[in-house]
Image (cartoon, rainbow, N blue to C red; front, side, top):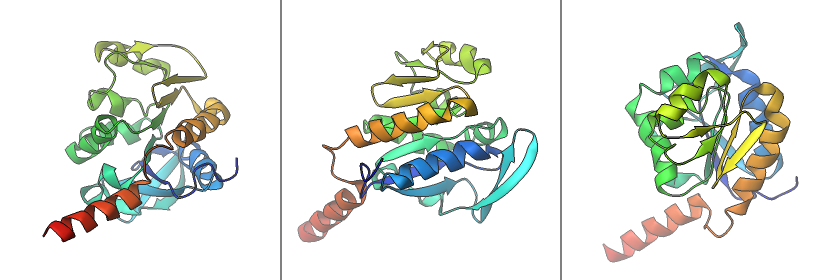
Length: 201
């Protein structure tokens, strides 16, 4: 991995209870590939990571969800941890943020319990995904097909089951995020749009 993601902004959506390695390892992977990752959360300040059931490190939030828009980012990563998506999925701003990536056809990566947000966003109908096994009934009820695989790719959506799958997950999110090259980087598109609005005004 060199500069496949140069100039791309990647949103990581997480809150307290995020499985630490599922945040830090994909973050390193996209950053190594040249992207600019940003941590978006339903709270300001810092979020608390966990290692299984034990407290881990804290991580500074770059932007609260109320100020974040999907059109400012090129791709989205949804880490797991049981408490993390359970808190996110009851926040309507977070759900809308996730749904907006699918409406725009932008690539998304979700691992472990992260796909719970895909259920809440109504993004799984007709899609094949994997996740932590306890989510499979929710995924099927949301119209998706669940498979037990290290990594599953479905039209720009990359999913994995658990931390042990991170090497494969990281490789595939970089590949899928890089494959979306025909799209102008989000920050450039947003600036271009603002310029057009100013000229019309």
